[in-house]
Length: 329
Image 1 (tube, rainbow, N blue to C red):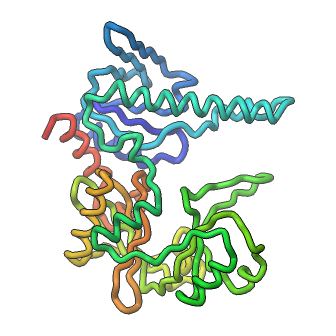
Image 2: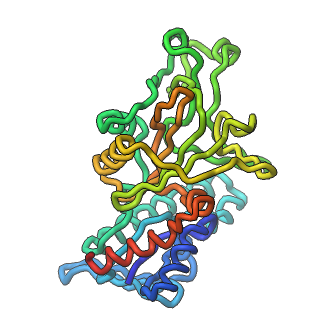
Image 3: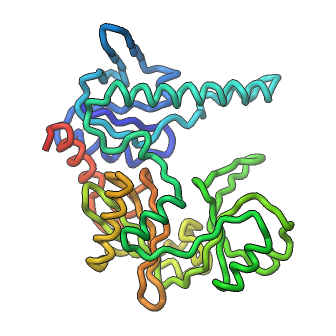
């Protein structure tokens, strides 16, 4: 049995991998985090007699003898929203926060029970520290942007004087917000002189990097020691010039397969090995003068956006990789 740990909302990638597993005749079970406080039946016992797991996920059983697993996503907490809408919102938020921590603990417990399984992505590999990644990438031979984290306006002004125009982006994972029915997304933004002038002398610790002039952007999917790169011509559209995730759905960016220089590909794979990541989506920039500059890696990034335009069939490759892990190949 191959166990796919995922979530209900926004996980078409999991579904496409499931389609390939079905087509290739593999036994699998999809465990959505939301199902563990809803319809799925769970029994996990720990004692002197050993550890046992019985998890019925949509009629498919996961046990402690499961051969391979993939921690793709987890629980969105969306099916706990009713707890926030009662007469005591503060209490509701506190309860949801507590239950979220319980689910995180359960996730770790499930991984421990399945410690003998072969894993594509484990819990500890689902997120990375951007500053650590930049250090490791540089040590692996990739060019990285000079990076400043500061809470002082004077330090930022000195950095701009040294580096020229700068951008800022989240130090951790970007968050999405919804206020009054309107969604908000965090993007990479340029820090203009007007923004700097409006900052207080002390502000919340923030990440800054020089603005790298792009010829185009690259998204590279890595799996099992191989790379599948794609070029994104984001600079031809003012809407996507600063961050290609500001998608122009009416006029999408042109995306094509790309061949990384051998030295860059080798450095990317060395970085992945040093970070102990079996898979991930890597972002780079091809500069106007032909350099390849590394930005970051997302261990659980979506890869359909690379698979479809480039005809890479990455969902099949993931399915086959999981089957190889299960069979010990």
